[in-house]
Structures are given as C-alpha cells and as structure tokens.
Length: 104
Image (cartoon, rainbow, N blue to C red; front, side, top):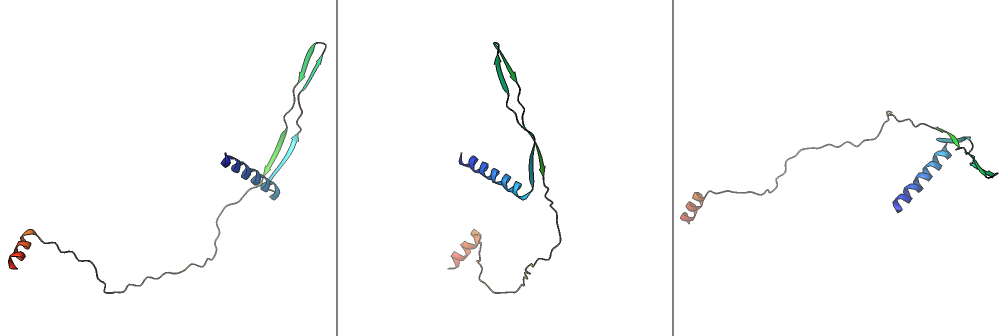
C-alpha cells in the first residue's frame, strides 16, 4: 500500500514539474455540464450532460551523441621476473615407494 502511494505522489510531482517547465501544456476546450432532471406534470425529463474536453501539448526531448574531450587515465603493465616460492607436488608410483622403503 505504501509503495502505491509513493508511486502516485511521484507521478503527481512529475506532472507538476512538467507543467512548470513548459514541457506539458493542458488547456480545456469544452466545459463540463451536469445532467439536468426535471419533474413536472407527473413526468420526469432528463437531459444529458457533457464531458469536458482538453487539448494537451507536449514538448520533446532530443537524445543523441556528440564528441567531447574527456581525461582518461593511462595504465601501463610492465613484465618483470621475480623469484617466488610456489607449491611443489611429487607423485610416486607404488613400485617407487617399495624401492625407497627397501633402501632404508
């Protein structure tokens, strides 16, 4: 419920901002009239009303690209050699282990 209320508030604020900046122009072209009902001589007469009409003009937003100079850092990678200790794994077959145990 709070999310719906927040969305409605944001929509109203966006419409107000659009009208204030001139991106949205709403003008009424036909006024509204309420229906009329008359009762006379035992008869009821109703006359239809009229809905309002509006003309809406909207602005436009142009989207495109342009060229600009932007400072971009340069990264350089230099290779060098350094001695480091790395793990070593030695795999012995069972026959090799028997020979080493016999030599002990």
